Image (tube, rainbow, N blue to C red; front, side, top):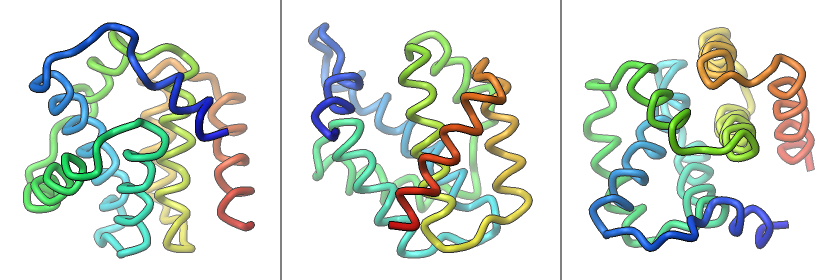
Length: 149
């Protein structure tokens, strides 16, 4: 399963290191934004973010540590959702966007609580990413199933 997800997220075109870091910064920033929506970021959420970036998005562990540290320091200077979604809509396939929503649900669920602000954020993101309510709901169910196991 992880190999399938890994292949989906790997781009066939070679990229320069700066572009990779930009993509990593964007994904990390969005994940930190989701985790921080309830006003606190738990270690379980940080662990889930790190593991998701490494295992699902195929990012380098050292780069993830570096970017995650920077994103945590700048969490109060977050970007608008449009900043994230405009890039994602231009560069991600529909399947990749759904997997991103699923990953964000896993991060939110990793602390054992769903705050109203968190679910609202995911509903807004789904709309901005042109993901149907059905696909968003199914992504949430898959994330919830994995968190309960």
